[in-house]
Image (cartoon, rainbow, N blue to C red; front, side, top):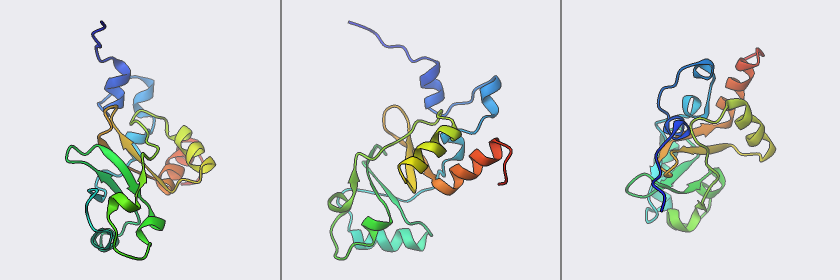
Length: 148
């Protein structure tokens, strides 16, 4: 039997404040948009689409009652005809990142996989926010001294 004790990485993964050289470095947690549309498995895609578009988004994170990420509805899923549910249209188990991941690493990964957005979660899978590729690229370029 092993009793796990949370360590430094768990602290950073929870998005808690850190000190030292890495403290000023942009990370997934500092760049992620916190106020993002969320929905539940059984919600109507038609209702979600209207709400998400009215808020100026093209994505919605599917979560449970504890805000654990279950899936992701991106523009292509939201544009589907018909009126299914979030659960039937979502991309299940989307790639997620922890808040401590460096923004330069994220920029490379998102470009290589052509990801328009990705959820940021705690190590327990709880939604922290959504990274938008344009935001990530801007932060990475600013960090490298390039044009913003």
